[in-house]
Image (cartoon, rainbow, N blue to C red; front, top):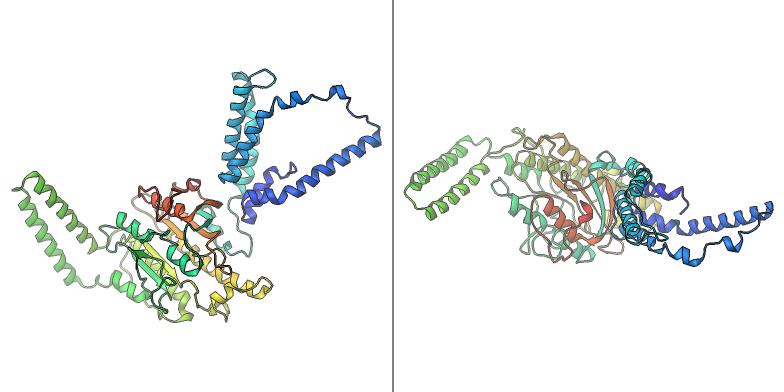
Amino acid sequence: MPPVMGAAAFLMAEFLGVSYAAVALAALAPAMLYYVALFIQADLEAAKLGIAPVPAEQIPPKRAVLSGIHFLFCFAVLIYTLFALSWQPERAAVAATVAVIFSALVFGYRGQRPGLMTLLDSIPSTGRAVIEILLISGGSGLVFPSGSILEPLQPHADDLLVLETDFNVGDNHEGGMSNMLTAGGDTSLDQVVADAIGQGTKFRSLELGALTSAWGGSNQTRMCYREGSFVTPDDDPASVWTRMFGDLGDTTGLERRQSILDFARDDLARLSSRLGAAERARLDAHLTALEEVEKSLSTTGTCEEPGVLVAPSASDNDAFPDIARAQIDLAVQALACDMTRVATLQLSHTVGPVVFTWLGESEGHHSLSHIDDSNTAGIDSFVACERWFAEQFAYLLAQLKALPDPDTGGTLLDSTVVLWAQELGDGRMHQCVDVPWVIAGGGDFFTTGRHLDLDETHDAVLTSIANAVGLDIDTFGVGTSGPAEVLR
């Protein structure tokens, strides 16, 4: 590429939301034309000024040129790390620099190898070259173009990983929906995580929805699974509220259950002194289980007793925005109160019939997803609907950011991993390829503020999310690729 594009290409990639490789490949032909034009211009200018060609004896022999061919290894490292491994430019630059030093020390150049002082003298110039890339790519951050689907997420850009990934198994609507969170296994990621970290909370996991069940339960309408069976979301915010807070006013019932637990704990404690070591260990395990039951009778964390929820009708298409907002608020409150540590929210389902009437639309979301590119008005309508989903995700992140986590001193988002997933990359082609996902939060586990076009399939992303919340697993579902280290 022309030199001016060297660092600017990274900026272009960020603004366009594509990979650096895509920018480089698109620039290949213009770059070749640029250098051909430069050569022609220099040759014509030399002819005009009467500058003679370089004498043959001054042209270096091929042997001299080939003596430095091993330095091509450095370019190979740079290209491989940028294009094959999707490394960030600063990381790839450091790897290429190490490759240069290695080549110079091992092979030398024209019979000489650099000494320590020569290497030290090269550090400032190398640093300046890397800093140029750092300043431009780092200064740009993750930028969503004006009017784009993800533009509503711009305030949270530094907390996001925007991904494009292929599914390891599954295709079309049904295959995408059923494999989205299972990666071909029989249990979805949320349930696996809930088994690991959800013990002792009121809800091991909390499944919420909005207009997910009008068609009943099928592999078109369900994304959560346990051992091959559907885990059905609760579409009614009023029902969710009652499950979460309905017994707060039942003081007598709570006190009765609490007194039974207190009696059982005291009785078991007296029994403990008369048991041997093995029996006492089993008894301690039983006491621990009782403590977990006790926790489920109360709420803890940064929450207050809520007021009465005025919920919209759970089956009303026009109430879809109100249902979604109420469910987001309830999910955040459940996490803040430590009622649960795993929550899922499903808005509609694949082949979704929801009509976005509140945006002035009259055609269903699924129909809009199949609009031809020539129908610009239809495309604009589909983008508007997708932007609405992005706005809900932005609202969720804002709510999590607004709440402190008393255990860490940070925000609730800092100690939470949030995944916005969908089941298809190209709805018109019904393919689970280049499926757009967004990850937010995760503390320091992920390097956020990036857009990545992954070589790894989506099972690797699910594995990494499991690792981020403390699960020590190497693969998930029927995946074999391991975690997606590029996310770190």
